[in-house]
Length: 109
Image 1 (tube, rainbow, N blue to C red):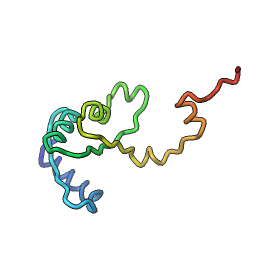
Image 2 (cartoon, one colour; image 1 turned 60 degrees about the vertical axis):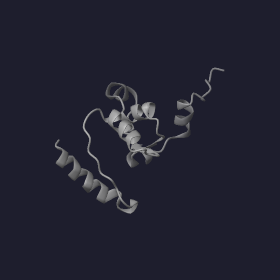
Image 3 (cartoon, one colour; image 1 turned 30 degrees about the vertical axis):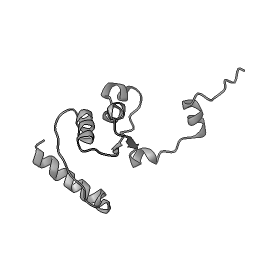
């Protein structure tokens, strides 16, 4: 993807979703995404990085890795992660939460 194409796509997205945010600075950088995000935030003395998650879990997360995870791990700037609406709208059952937190007692006790 060329720099011009990337900038055009960012301008379209910023117009759709960030029009109420005031001035939005659009920057295109090439390289390892997590390194570029962390470096840019430090260079620009950012107060906060806000980054979306893809909501991948399990094997796909392990195999594909996570830019968000690497940004969180390596950034000296605070990071706020936001789940996409498609993930936010999924309702977890109480049993799912108990299982994820390993709170479910075994019936054999």
